[in-house]
Image (cartoon, rainbow, N blue to C red):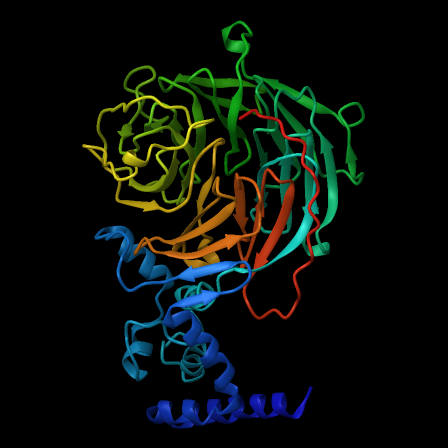
Length: 501
């Protein structure tokens, strides 16, 4: 370690000792950190002061809210991501700005939070300011379109599914080595969705077929060919005479005992894996069910979104009448492409073909609404429709800037552990990844690399790392600035275009 680094470390220890013995002179101690403070303060001001620009994209923060969210969600988000109030009271400076890392560390040494260390909110306040906008670094490059890409719950694995029938599982902790390469069986059109079981032993994948395949991914072999490894088919059409339809969305329940799926026959299906049979079919919507998910760990509540423009809530404990939802949420002017739950059984976000993300509170319900017809698969969104608002919009907030065309673009809350779910991020038809602030609605980052639509992307559950995948065949990772590692040069291959959606 060089002399400068030694001086920095020494400055931190001296300042920490002064804080402990003289807590009332906290600001003086911070100033005396010298070299230890300088670099972190400069980085902090970059994130506090406004724009962050790099080769990948830019962050346009603004004090003026893009959308005003005067709601309980603001308080819940702040509780998860705002540091202890005593740090604001004891530290000089503008209270509206985030508390800098050095001030946070000094406060921790002085035990001003009275907790003896960082709380989860303190941690989120620190980590969430370092957005994964640096890069990208190439993870993989395929010759077919990437349709799905997600981290496992613990972040140790990453799953990507491609139109050319490949489903790859990467070991994140082993330098992104391909741990399992699955060749999809009886593929129709593309891999539309994948879901990894909570214990990470099994993976299910879907295509435009009523058969959901489940594969044991815990075996030692890397290749998982359909004629070598058992790809067990779960028939979701058995209850209705075996007619054909496609499945757009599939998710494991938290306990791994059930699957929920959304289909092209306007229905929601629940499959009991222990009993190996369908346990529920709901004629849920008036058009394709593009997305479904369990609302929380209980598995009782299900959210669904459809091309009928509606989001619906289904409570399996109290079906008053057959196929009757517990709530209908309207506000999108066009079809819903994806839903992500906040995990609390109350809030979720949806991506829509009206080019917006909406935040919902399930306690607000109403009847449905239908706008004029257009087809997002080959038509641009009408310019005159971009500023339209649903006459009975029940959403809590709306986020605009990204593009939802040609395919079912996905959006998500940022991780709870590292960010307190204070951001929303999404792929986009314009080949970018957009990150929004939940409370202000501002675009805090736009990641630019891909040359084709980004259908899916995933934020690591614990680290400031985001992976995006695109129809250009690239799977790339983004990290927070300052890691010192140079991005991997990406050589573009010609992708064989197949105009299906």
